Image 1 (cartoon, rainbow, N blue to C red):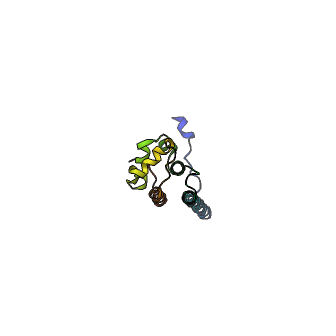
Image 2 (cartoon, rainbow, N blue to C red):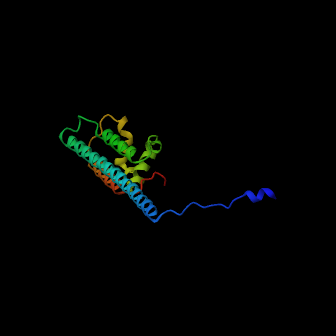
Image 3 (cartoon, one colour):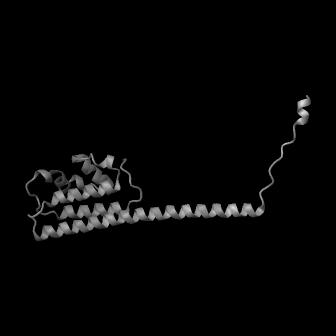
Length: 164
């Protein structure tokens, strides 16, 4: 019991001064505001980049369309459209979900992501068959139209998801 006499009371540290408390609060507000600004800036950059990808794809599609009008036999247009669609999809969606798609699965993905059913029809089938055909460039106007529509629909989407 003698040992307890030597114990002293616990002394709390002095309270934080009002000036220091105010200063820390201001620092926390500035830090939070900085992080918020950075997140908004990053989000805007992502949107700008995705919009630029769509604009570039539309320009490429327009060039292909002009090529078809000027000299349809010089280039295999359906294969080029298929490559363009694949590149845009790989930019917008996870590579592991898109890269392995082929055939009907690829057309179903295009239908799903573009909110349409037109890729399952005759013009969409050209995208699958074009690598195996000699030259199939006659009357591709409908394929150009549905590709333009797919690109525009993709640019308007907010949440990009592959899951159905």
